Length: 287
Image (cartoon, rainbow, N blue to C red; front, side, top):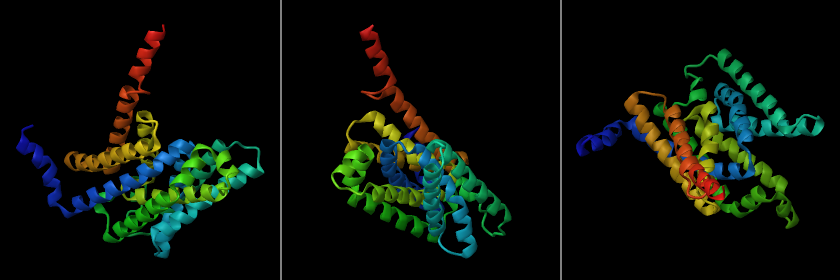
């Protein structure tokens, strides 16, 4: 590919307003999801992220029916799913991972039923797979507001949330209200899931909430570096995934997540300290 063709590959999509919007929104969501994914990775909440991202679906459909912002319905059902998980876990002998599976599949199934029975001029199945190429100005504003709220909250409570994720026992011992921090983090997770709906949809948003943080975790032992690496990974995969989806006429959300997965595989193999190649070399030296 010569230089002119290379430049044309990047500039041609920018001639379309919908692509400019899609690239900008995807990059913003990539930043927010990547920052939160670092906390999800440290806390070991990958399955909880999956639960919340799927549980918001009936809330989104109900919000559409009531003509209120999607974020309101999604937030209510996201937090509601967490409360349900906590209640069932406390009142029964069932383990947490089983409870999470029960609750998120139940909520998700309810969402599918509501979608099938809701008369709509909008294809609500876009909730499942995202529709960033057709995002409206109202949805862009909603995504920006959610992103700002999430990023500002994390910036203000960064140290408290970090200690809560690393060592909740120590956090309690120095007077932090870990119960409040627990629900703040889950509330941010619910909001971020809504932001990811437009780009990759409910089914794939969990990848954006897990993969960038997991990739960065393999590449560094410092949390501030971890956030920067995760953000770079998230933005790169979001922007390039949107470009690739345009040129191959493929699903945008799928392209974004495939790129994130490929970046994780590269990090898993070539990470300078925790990569498979380094571990194999150390094993050889030990033998």
